Image (cartoon, rainbow, N blue to C red):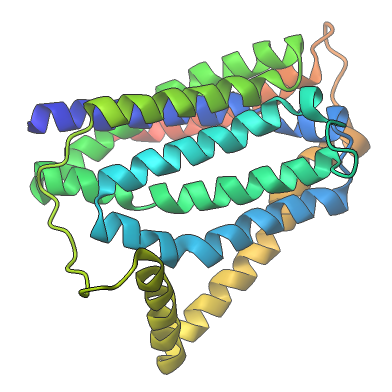
Length: 288
């Protein structure tokens, strides 16, 4: 059983890393060059994503604690896959609804992205810890990190290739990977070490989610140090959002890329991402 759980976890880490690298290596070219989003719209995209995560993080945790980590992961994978596929099919659905622009579809996708991420966040770690025991987690996480780095390198190449064919294809392919992973987990993922949280008799799921969110808010309000940590995290995230969302736009619009042997912008972004991964990969190998 431990062996099966380890294989499932490694597959999950590999596929999600491959999908993320496929989508996010060249996403700026899609958002800026293809969809024409301006810097303010790019910041709004990030803000909607972060707010979705902030609002639903504590609420969706009820699913993992009450109904199981497996269910939470499967729901999260399907929500994430739907969010990414939605962005990948924007060229086909743009204009279908006359009052919904491509930018509005992107914001809808960010909400699904944020909610899906809260279902996955922490649930995968809690599940593998329940299945194999805490004493085996260190070696499993280290192996998973190597798988993830390898998947990142493959995803970078795939992203560059797909982006040269059509800028929306990385999102479409990455979203399909997430949907496929959701199917894989629903079939092969087993949950034997989970002890569900006891529910109050007659309490609905929605009531429990609301109570979880409110109880968390009460704890933070009653502990000044927690409130300070929350504010520091909030402002740190807000401060970094501008760089995270706009450095590619600044590079594309203001700085530009060297004109060397006809290397495209997609390839340049791939080179930047690959160099970053190689730096991390070298540190991981030294820890073996």
